Length: 217
Length: 208
Image 1 (cartoon, rainbow over the protein chains, first blue to last red):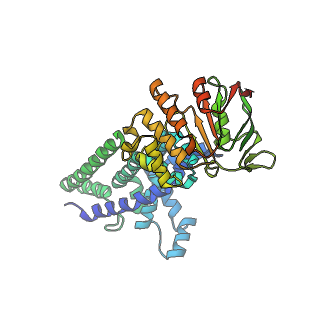
Image 2 (tube, rainbow over the protein chains, first blue to last red):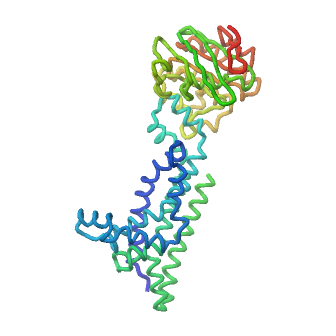
Image 3 (spheres, rainbow over the protein chains, first blue to last red):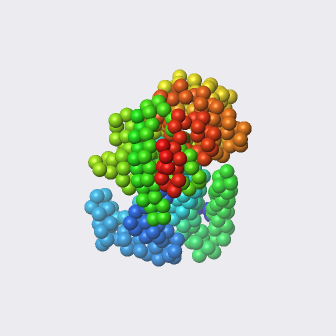
């Protein structure tokens, strides 16, 4: 049987993570692409780190970082009175971290590809740095930003290791589509696993087509 | 009145130049490639910081190494026309010109003057090189800047369009109420546009 609740939860979390992460990463990508500062290479390496470590390792580290004994876990509990791990909020935070490189890479690549003379022309027209960012850099980097959005969204749909570690598999709360597929297979419910996989496959294909089309333009 | 004395020291090359221009005058700087002409314009514009020197316009100091004044480029009220057109590709030509125009009527007058009215709603990519450069000139003049810097504005055009662009600029002189500094390696263009011609070689002004 198809687990619709898990599917909706997965889409909901992807819809939350994508805009928040893109807005957070945008100024960072700008700084890295247009400014020189001490520790720039290290910052870049740090932002790309989730690509280079296994999702289970990242999930485990995030689980430790969010546990009730940790600073972050205690801080969150003091404010909300609730625990961070095995909640939607915890899952949101974990997916924000694990998706950083997927948001950062295409966006910073498109910022770096931008003709720097346009930025200089903008300065000569009297545009401040902030105005240049919003009126020149962003409109001319739409392809990269769209690619970042599509990659983060589709990666959120399919994330497994980090989700299982930080969220567990609480139905309706933290059980996402990929975890649901895993459980279906474990219970030999191949039909349910196949239906969910097909939905994710079609969604993935759509985003892949979208990215390819946008980048070609 | 524009008064510039700047020095920029780099590892393998340095620029040391002094130029003056009347309030509504035009000076041309000629020199071979690599003479430091573009660097000099970039120093005046604030896109690069001089090592030492002073830049003054209308008794206002834009840069002074002595008093540590360095007004950022976007606050200098300078229009800069680059070698290659730099109109914003996501805006149509009309918006490119009128958005920063001090007076929209004057901007429209320039669109008419440079004969680009038929391109108003077109994106720069849909115009020819000559038309784009004329639009860039109209944009630069429409801002009514304190200084107009022209960095080989017609060098990327074919001879016919280069001549046409040059003629348009000369005919628009009465609409430009600020000092104009033109950098070029074309002697004819330099003497046609400039009231005075400076020669630059190896980063230094050889003569008034």
